[in-house]
Image (cartoon, rainbow, N blue to C red; front, side):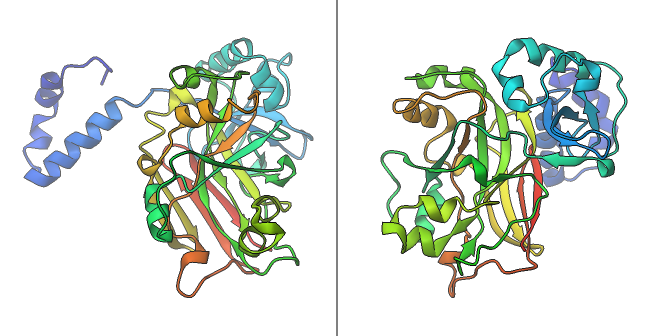
Length: 331
């Protein structure tokens, strides 16, 4: 079905099948077909990876959510090997990736690839607190009137399937699934109406949090509780903004040992991507590769009765519709 196909033509073509469907199932089928109709045809899912034969970061394209990897550096050896450099070169490198996506290229089997975080060593990791209306409700606190900004150090970033290490200094390590925005173009004092021009794309983040250090220690400054090593898994891919139908209408969930602990939608975000970029860029210059974690929905361990925290052997899966799932074992 083409993007411009008239709906009466679609219904005529599908009428024999649709007549067999009951009223409610018909509505569901139409909604799903309509959603599919507006999906981009070829998603660009940029990754950093290595293999036993390719040490150090290499740039690749994930061939669909959960698919194998196309080696971009093999397609064009002049491309940089890190995402940071790739993003800094802007449209020049993106156009090469588009050509690779359109070509019929060899695909490395997923099992042979080690995924790195899609972005490593960014200039900054900006985080947003209390940015889901339903998360504020869970804490019985008012919705913020301005974004609440804190940060993680870039040294906390690990890959989408790497282990999360429980630090001996904390007994209260908690989970938080988040939508992460990756900046693609430098800017300061960016207007909300111009903000998306500065976005490269989106990825899944796990904002691992040591609640004792966040809420009671260190003068209740959040930084130390948020920035232990391995406390920022990212991935599996940087999905470019033109490949995401609507970043503010995506199902978002977290599972611990297979049990759903967080389940919401990014439409619950108080401050959307554009507002966050406009707000943060008042204070700091945003650079290509900078990561903005946009907040977490309800269901975190600390607000359960009694509170629940991560322990050795747990497996945490953070998943966002259209972006993928990251899976981190707790050790």
